[in-house]
Image 1: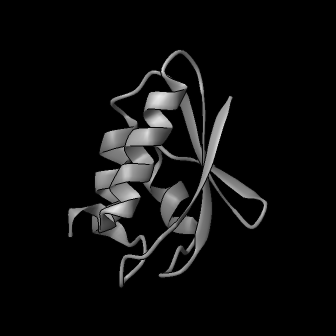
Image 2: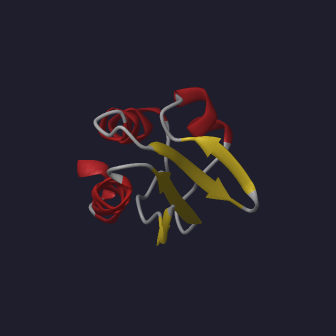
Length: 87
């Protein structure tokens, strides 16, 4: 299992469009991937799960992956978050 904390700096947080980009990237990996916010963990490959966290600008989240490509998955998703989901 591999985990990294990142802060969402996107002005509008993780709304539908950036969440879709995030999920598409997460689905490129074989590992199980989760997002954790305030002790609540959801499947990072589920749009409804990700949106249910209500992630706004300035929110710290944990990206967690478990599997054969866990480090690559977390690294790629952290990069996506740090570049504001290419918005």
